[in-house]
Image 1: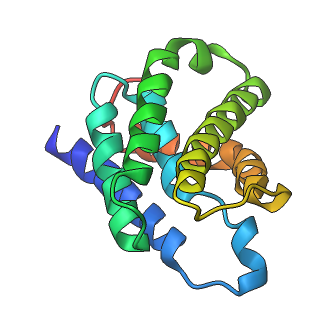
Image 2: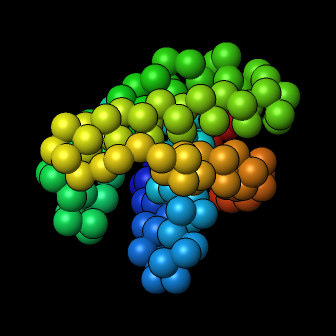
Amino acid sequence: MNGAWLVIGLTIVVAFILNLIPVPEWALPYRPDWVVLVLIYWCLATPDRLSTGVGWLVGLLIDVSNANVLGLHALGLATLAYVTTRLHLRIRMFPWWQQSLSVLVLLIGYKGLVGWMRSLFGELQFDLMYWMPCLIGVLIWPWLFVILRDIRRYGRLFSG
């Protein structure tokens, strides 16, 4: 069990690193939300182990690392983790393309909630490029799913 938490933690740390790698200004809208995608995967794969509390903690870490309003991403990721764990059985039974559409809906819901909260503070204007990480995330999802599933199975961390 400790090894399982280590692997989950390491994958989230790698996702944080991918989010923090500097990219040119023009590429920022095309960067997927790596941490969100990894959290979605672990909530689907291990809904009994990963829940709202982990989403809240990871969201607080995002808020601190990006110098955002404290709790902004925490509320968004806690909500995302809750919805994902509640719907995990339905989403997991879908073929890969329907699962990707479900992930798109989850990403849009997360970005919409965080964007709405940021707009309350006057920090954000919604535009088309704001939603681009959702589309990029959906394109990456099938490969990320396979990579994380293989890591989980190779380490025999959880059944499935």
